[in-house]
Length: 390
Image (cartoon, rainbow, N blue to C red; front, side, top):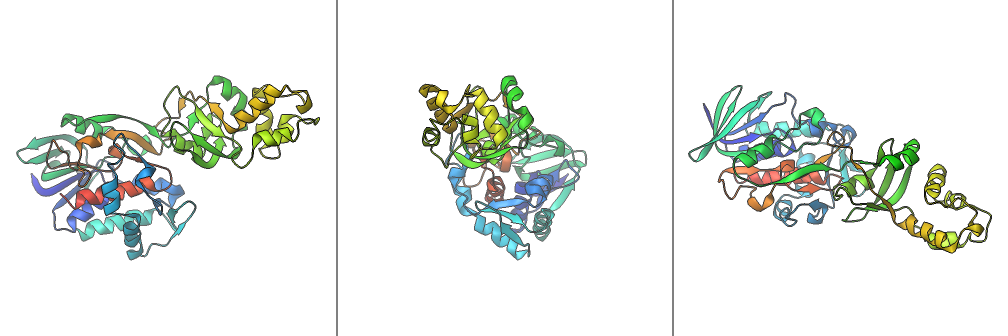
């Protein structure tokens, strides 16, 4: 049985930076992962260039049943801190939009940087190492694996969520939390496309690839970005953002004309021989305008439409309500909403209040960021918080 100060389960973004932070403090660290390739979610992120943080990161950019929990960690390890690390490793990067920072080259540069930081901390690696059981032994923990049993004074769980199962996502972290008596907020897909019901799919399914600038909300913040129609439903950044707040059975609200007054636009054409679709084709994609107006029952000339119909069309342009049949699932989700209940963790260290020495960091925790580098920043901030404490 090998003895370590800290065992970190999960060699992803949070786990590697936690292990490096602890190791560089002189702690003896073992980093275990069931996969043979580390940091796969980093590698595939941002189109292969890794949107590694966001310049405008604030606590308000995160969801949690305990919304103030993330404040401490985010304040103590900021985007500027991670940017400094990236610069020290000579990785070139650029801002794309809305504060999103990407590598100029490859996401692999971030993985190599984290590996190098772990090497500087003399971290011991065990990859391709399946865990059979985790038990509490005295004041420490024993992790039984296919490579033998390892004992650690503290244990950090950085196993991620359920998103992107093709790279090995699993519920291991949630099960482990429950085994030790911690509550888990039921997980669900986040930052995920939404599926049309059968009627809307029949109407709009052939418009796949059409995109509009829109403002979208789902019982949460309003997001102004691109909305994309797909062969299954709605996607694009605005929809992905709102999806994390969406609850089954409720509508998604879409303002299709955020830069226009729909009432004034239609009123100006009120006496014309134009159809609503032809009026709207100046500000919306023509095919979408045509099929959307058909769904609204507004196919006659503007001069022939009852006033109540024109008002209804204008109102709907600013509040098109779509009730999705569901999401497209974890296969298409970028993150997992929910996870280990933060009310049982220290916001400063990520340590369990009920089980001293047990920590949870990253996506496995009930803290979910918006699209645009916020979830990576949570991984870095929570990883460093635990790494400084173990």
